[in-house]
Length: 319
Ligand code: LIP
Image (cartoon, rainbow, N blue to C red; front, side, top):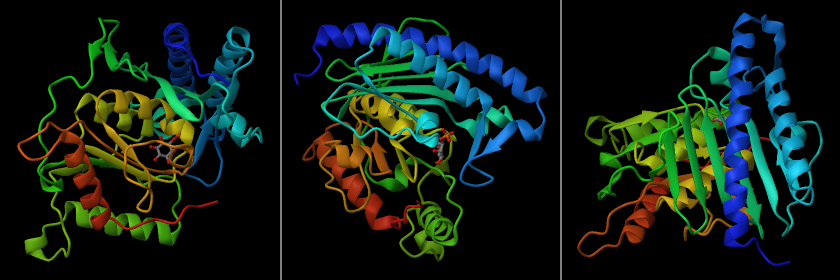
């Protein structure tokens, strides 16, 4: 099966962008409703921190319906459909990969960093991504081979990263994003906490293998963490335990902004986001880094990936 052509991807970008904005209106409506709702309107999936609302489901239904009408032969993988038992295997066919509300916890708490994330996979590789945060009216998009951009408050798209790439000598100079995720079992929480301690801690003040990064951030949305690395506001983002729909769109946007995306500690760190990495639930993304004398930007990204995995613990995946 031949892959999508540049003209088809261009048309898909127009469609996906409009769809993300429509979904954004429903997310905003949902936010109003959720702030008036009672605790019993907020559902739990795996545990009490893995939240779902009727709007996660409503937004996914809207998106799924519009996609089926416009692209009836395309496959669809969505967070809520997956939870409801629809788990089609990935094939070579074009496949939308959608998180209707990424950052559901933020959505529930009225912390204005939640978004719709619409990715498109073709030939088992992410090829297009649109991430829209309707609370801030920030729309990120990217198409394989055609760059990525950010449009704020309906303004003209600005190419990503927003400023020329800078060097990154080591993690000690980095602003890094991490997330606790929803697996709160002892092995996961302990290994993440050890990793965060090393990233933040001062090696000269008792933290063995401490990198003393500038600081650690958690936006609470994997998609928006990826977008912020693409933008250049974060140097790295690492998470274990999120899912392809959380990251699919962000992968394209980050890569097209010169970012380096890889999987867990044992993945080949060559920047190729294979099916194994896309579905592996372990992700590390590093922003574009400028070439310096004696080191290309790509070499620097691989060096930072090695430093990262010399620092953090691997974390077991939950079921
Ligand atoms: C969430 C992520 C968040 C991550 C959670 C979860 P949801 O997605 O984006 O960053 O830490 O594990 O996957 O549930 O809000 O769509």
